[in-house]
Length: 99
Image (cartoon, rainbow, N blue to C red; front, side):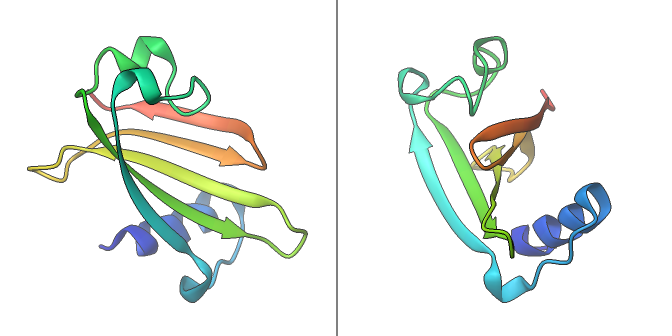
């Protein structure tokens, strides 16, 4: 399953929103721990993640203009999901750590 498929499915199951695949943006960034904002990864989770870490971001702007972002930290070798965060219009909705 691609990241975009995962994002679209999660938006439907968790937030009851239909999101067209072609309207989802994707970017990936490598960050060192001292570059990460607490909004993205709280300190207690950050200490359990690799340094540097790969953060993949999926973005969607809904009909009301709200920006939805899912940030996923993955292991670069195994592609296993280590952490995820959901942000709507600059406010954290949830985060989960998997390590």
